[in-house]
Image: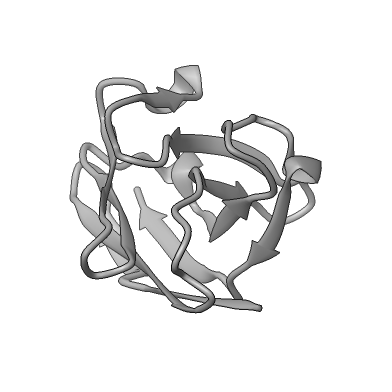
Length: 124
C-alpha cells in the first residue's frame, strides 16, 4: 500500500505561481514513475506531467510546457509540481499518482495509487 498526500494548492491571480507537493508513505522502498493529473469542473481528468523513477526524464502536456516543472526528491519520497505563469484555464483539482509499472504513461489507467487532490484556482 502507498499513500499519497498532495499539498500546496490555493487561490492565485493569473500570472502567479504555486508549488504543489506530493508526499508518499507506506511501501515506498521501490521507486516508480510519478505523474500529476488535473480535473476541471465538468471535464475529464487529464494528464499534466510525469517523471521517471530517478527524475532524469520528464514529460508535459502541451498546454503547460515552459510554465510547469515536475521534479522529485526520492530521499524525501516527494514529488513536486512548480507552476509558473498560471492562467485561469489551469484552474482544477490536481492529483498526483504512482505508476503501476516501471515506465510513465499519459493514461490514468496506468496509475494505481492516487492522492486525494488539491484545489488550484487561478483568478483573472
